Length: 57
Image (tube, rainbow, N blue to C red; front, side, top):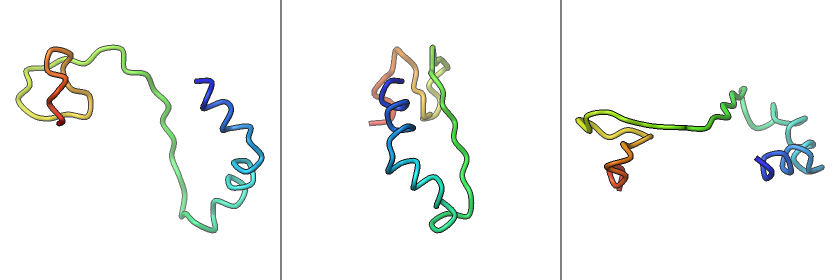
């Protein structure tokens, strides 16, 4: 989280955020922490099972 906070206060980032409409039609940010992921491994997922961490390789 330190890196995210450092980015958020960096002058270049602040300027870019103010001018985001020049490059994008909008934006949506999700900041999250995955505590656990589980399932039957029937399909690949962004958060693979802990017992099958190689699912996305």
